[in-house]
Image (cartoon, rainbow, N blue to C red; front, side, top):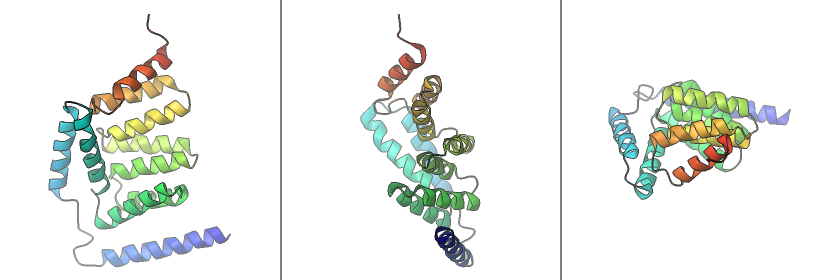
Length: 195
């Protein structure tokens, strides 16, 4: 009962703060600048053609950073808070914050991806998979979502799905660190030893 009251109070405070921000002139119409999308496309192209793992790592980091900041300032604030809660193990709170971000910007793929991670860590595998499907629907090049999907399938010992998802990771991010080794291992588990 007390937890529900605390959650309701927290939600009222959150929404009051968001409403106040939205009343600031120009705030509600603030969109991610087109140059962020241009930069993202260039980084994704560079990732696909990275010469080696050392070149891929900083590109992956930059892309993931951009994905979390493509929304409005209010959405970015919710994403940052959700990520902090996720790191602290407060999965239910993270699910709530990412859900609020999705409510404000239903097209932000990374909000679905991060909520999928929080849901999975909270034990909601079905919800996590649904969020990963939404992620790749909004951003088909989200290599990190396919990576997460592969790991979820692996924990369920669904080796063929884990392998299929990792194949997609390798298509989008061919030089991801340890990627080739993981692909071979998942293929072995999915289809047996090669003859």
